[in-house]
Length: 202
View (cartoon, rainbow, N blue to C red):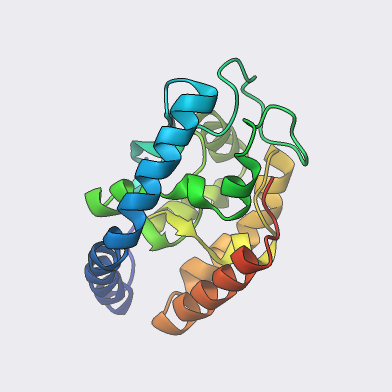
């Protein structure tokens, strides 16, 4: 995939954003690490191993990386996306999903530079390849490092089908075009509201 570049102002923003990403992980670590330990122990006792779910996702400039999550579904769960009131969720893990605590291992992805706190949500490789082949504008979302949360997530929620991914593309492209600290702050505030009111999770 041909690598595209942002204007100089956007490049400066991304450099500063990277510093804030690392600082955010450092600040969150004292609370996140004990939570991760408790969640890992619970999943291991109730749902067995592995504790982590690993999946190849499309990253910055079309690269691939392994995204980490806590495994909150039973081991023999099918590969299809989560549904509302999904019966495959491990007992007691629905709250973890509602509060987005299953995403905590992605702090490692942020620290590695594979993800940011805010950006287009990384998509599984098969879905990304399918959309890249059919929607020419789709590759533009790879101009930005993928994020833990983003404009599409607060505007539309999480997606489970190719059609929904195409629908949310307009939100991702809007973010790529309008990227700034102001919109990042707006996304952060709205994400906190969504988590507190437990909206949009499956």
